[in-house]
Amino acid sequence: MRTGWRIGIAVLVLVTIASAGVLVSATRAGAALLLSALEQASAPVEPGRLAGQVDAIVVVGGRTARVHHAARLHLATGLPVLLSGKGTGDSGFRAESEKMEDILLRQYGVGPRWVETESVNTHQNAVYSWCLVAGMGVRRIALVTDPYHMPRARAEFAAAGFEVVPAPVPGGTDPGGRPPFRWSLEAFRPGKAGWQAARRPLLEWGGAMRAALAGTVPFRAPSCP
Image (cartoon, rainbow, N blue to C red; front, side, top):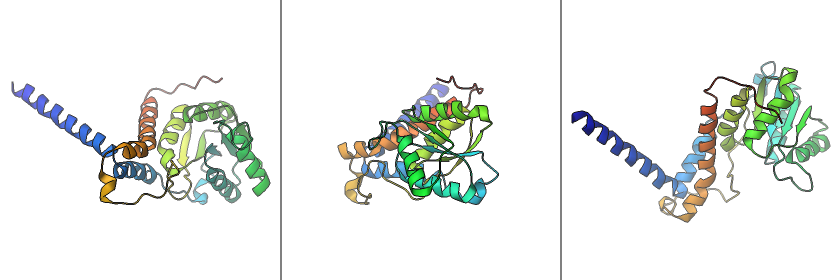
């Protein structure tokens, strides 16, 4: 009886915590906290830390700020660059990685060593990048993406077989492109706006946890397309 009572209390506590988490996630304030926690998980990296420590700089397709940051890292270290991501294409380019290549060549006079043009999500970014460079001995990488995306991207690339040094774009960003968040009493009110704001942070947290769990099983090289 006593054991059953303890189990009941434990279940009640877990349900209460989960319910509180859902309630917080339904507010713009909760979404901001979730996003901030993602961004604070990875600090900007000093270029000097990368030289001699990694084999390549890998850029995940997305905001152009990522490729500008990668260019600065390359110019400071001389490390080769891999651009990854088809996405949905961008500004007349078939793949996001092709637009990033154009930026590197035209604005920095830098040619990437590898351009991966078929991946359409973070998991494929990691797997296809591994398939492209693993045979060349590239294992340790500096991974460039936005701070809020780094936990999920890092977990995916680690699960694919890479040793990852996070190199997030300096400064946080609102992934939804909305104005900067302002704290107010209204921000703590659950509602549709809260759920919309929390959608991206929840996706990132869920993806990071899934990839982290995948990384706990014995490593098997990904099946390459």
